[in-house]
Length: 206
Image (cartoon, rainbow, N blue to C red; front, side, top):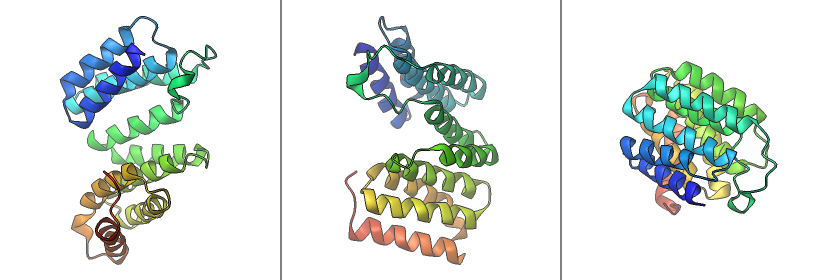
């Protein structure tokens, strides 16, 4: 539990873009006595995100690789079942890596990773699908492919409306900003209009 709390604090530091704190807390979680394999995987990818915020792609990639290896090994100890960490899979780790690749200036690789991992994502993970489609949309936008970005974002918005996912709406907001310079393209205009309507007429809890 101590390791899990440290991981969550690192996650919060990343959301606040406090890279040094995120890395420090993630490292503490990985060193914590009794940390399970899944918690160490989550903490390792959180450290990777901290390095990404610092602009250190080499360190980030190394920690993502470590997290992937940890997540790929089945954990039959049942030690962390109460924390519901089943989402920590290689697919989850690669989705986090792909998101960082957008900011590292490699959105084309990120697009390929998102597309591949989305194909393997079980339909039951509908909220995650909405989040990852939103990130795919941002990757397409940064790659200079506004029509594909709008298509992915439109699918994500439909999921957000169905699931009332504030997380997906937050990711869609980032995708919308990346699409602003193509506001005159019909597909983009249609998506941004739907997004604005959704945000103003029936805002989700944030």
